Image (cartoon, rainbow, N blue to C red; front, side, top):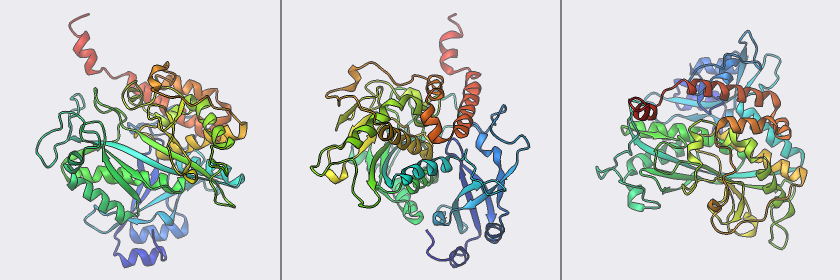
Length: 449
């Protein structure tokens, strides 16, 4: 983050180009690349612009053609660089900077369908109540061989040993060290960008890693996850492999999640409202969990935003299938880790690694806030495996969007115009997906039916 004026910061580093980044509905970085001087000029005279229809792009790069929430004339909107996010881009040969941009209409009104604006909207609701949420994400991903044929299954990447992992080596130190070259670049590039990552571990799948972030402000953490995913992909490409944040890239292996640890502080005292003076769970903590439970089905389009996302949510695969909660229970979707009282928090284990971090965090915090506002009582905490209970999470995107449609309090909190736009984009993606004939259909139906 720059500690000087942007002009001085850019000049001192000899920056040639600036990448103006805007996260779209899928969390894909969109935007513009400008010569540094043109960026500085545009920043001051308000001429940095981009079409509003950026926010109706599907993950395939096509548009929601029947959009009802954006301007028919495809108006331009203003890019507003958030200078506290100005960072160097460490993987480019020429000196390049990146900056995350908010967006506004010509009259100065916020573009309320922008994912970053949605998270800001939810945080403002906490601010009205003199509350400050704190989060800490954990993000899983796979390293895979380059794959140039989408019909061909992905294969685990090969590390320094020259051998593929035959199966996952959960928490394996040597297995994680096999990809030291990639991981060292990730750490170095994150440090250069001010992305505050913490520990790394090997997860249950072959060449599957997890990196934890230090806790902090939700908007700052969403920005960091947004930049982190881009950084990991670039580090993998440098070493001739791919990094994927697909929720379920391998048929018979665990999926990848983005677990979100959440607590809430009183702004005046700085104390965690989730715990009483005697170190017990507070009523507001239980109400927060109640909100996460009641609105979980409706929030699924933000936790599991792609058709592939629902392949991850199956029993006995390190992924949740119900709405239960438990103390230090990793089979439950909502886990209260054992911790010192001041660190009392709830871990939402439902979001996939493929989720847009701004929207997954916004949805989770919105559900918790509704729980506190409506004083929703949670179910009793479970003991033992949550997989013995009936699968209650939506099984498909269609089912999840249906639940969101009827969850008026959640829609109002996130912004009804945004929810309508997001749903339209997801429906357009499903329409495109339904046209695809899969390899399974060719394998089992071609000569048998």
